Amino acid sequence: MAACHSVDLDRWRVTLDEAAARVAGRFVRAEPRRTAGQFMEGLLSGVERKTCWSLAERAGHCDPQAMQRLLRTAVWDADAVRDDVRSWLIEQLEHPDAVLATDETGFLKKGECSVGVQRQYTGTAGRIENSQVGVFLAYVSPLGRALIDRRLYLPEATWCERPERLAAAGVPDEVEFATKPALARQMIAAALDAGVPAGWVTGDEVYGADPGLRGDLEQRQIGYVLAVGCDRRVHINDGRTLVRVDDLAERIPTRQWQQHSCGPGAKGPRDYLWAWITTATRPDEHRWLLIRRNRTTGELAFYLCWSPRPVPLHTLVRVAGSRWSIEELFQTGKGQVGLDHYHVRGWTGWHRFITLAMLALAVLTILAATTQQPNAESEIIALTVAEIRRLLNALVLAVALPPEHILHWSIWRRTSQARARRSHYQRRQAK
Image 1 (cartoon, rainbow, N blue to C red):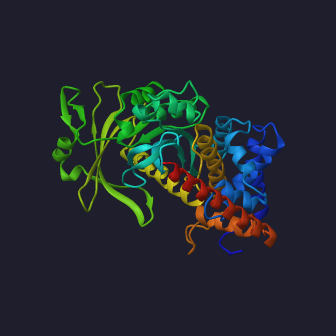
Image 2 (cartoon, rainbow, N blue to C red):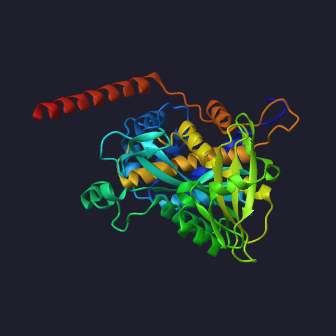
Image 3 (tube, rainbow, N blue to C red):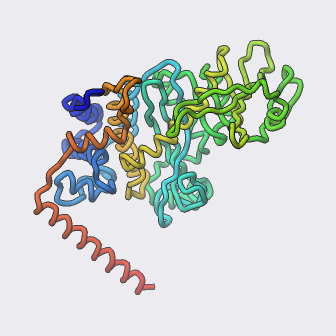
C-alpha cells in the first residue's frame, strides 16, 4: 500500500457485509435476501450496464429471473430499506449543522409505458426529452454527503388524470399528484420526523418559489437558503418597500460585495462575490436576501434566507454552496452505481432499483468517510468515490467466471434477442 494512506481490505469487506445485514430483515425469504446482496455488489462492480441480465451473469445465475423477481414481485418494502439506508448513513455522517439539499434529475426513456414518462425538460439532457423525473433528498455534512430519499414525479395531465395508465404501471391507489416542491416537503418532513440532525435546507428556484416549503421549515425552526428568480420581490426598509431582487443588486455599492468560497470545485475553490440584505419585517426576525455574483461574467443568483438565530454571511454562503453536492451525487450515482441503468417500467420496480442503487452508493460514501486519508501536505489527493470503487472491484469484489458460464450467457442473450426481433417483425406485419 502507498505510504501516505492505508486501505484496510478486511474492513472494506466488513462494510459490504454490514450493508447487506442492515437491510436483511426486510426480506422474509432467503432467496430475495441473497439476491439483494448480489444485486448491490453488482451495482458496485465494473459491469458496464447494470441491468438484471448483466448483474445475474456476474452473480453466477443461469438466467435473470431471480434479479427480475427481486424488482417486480418479491415481497419486500423498498421504503423500509430506504429508511435503513438513511439510518446507516446518518450514524456515520451526522452533524448538527448538516444541510438537506433537494433537487430533481431526469432519466431518459423511450416509449410511453415507463411510469411517469413524458416529454419534459430535464437538466440531464439540457432540453425537453422523453424522460422520467425523480426528486431526491441529500444529506450534506462535513463528514460526507449521500442520497437519503427519493420520489418519482408523476405529471398531472398525462398520468395522474389517467387512471388506466396508473393502474397499468402499478401505481398505488393512494398516490396523488404532487408538485416537485411538495415531494421535497414530504421527504424533508420524513427525515426530520425520523430524527435526522440538520440545521439547514437548500434547493434551486423550483423549491425556493414554494411558500409552503419555506413555511414548513420556519415552523420546524430549520434554516434555509433557497434560490429564487431575478423577478422575485422582497421587503426592505422594515417592510415598507417591495422591490425586485435584480433591482436591489444594482443598488449595492462595490465595497459591500465580499469574496467568499462556497466550497471546493473540480478546478479549485468556487470563489464568488457575495452581498446580503436584511429583508426582515420584524426586529426579532433573521431573514435575508443573499446575492451571488460571478467575478468574471457578472452573472447574478439570488437566495431567500431564513434562520432561527443570527448567522454570519459565510454560513449562508456555505449552505448555498451545498446545493452543488446533490448534483455531484447524481453524477456519481449514475456513473458509479448505475442509478439510471434500470430497465423497469412499473412503480414498484423503479423504487426498488433506485433504493438498491442508493444502498450501493451509501457503501462508497461510508468507505470514503471512514478510510484513512493522506494529510494535507501530501502530494497525493484523498481517495475519491470513483477510486474507492476501482479498488473495491480489483481487491474485494473480483469474480472469476468459468468459460462455460460466459458462453451460456452469450447464447442466452442472442436467443432472447432473436425472440424480440421476431416479435417486432410480427407486430409490424400485423399492422
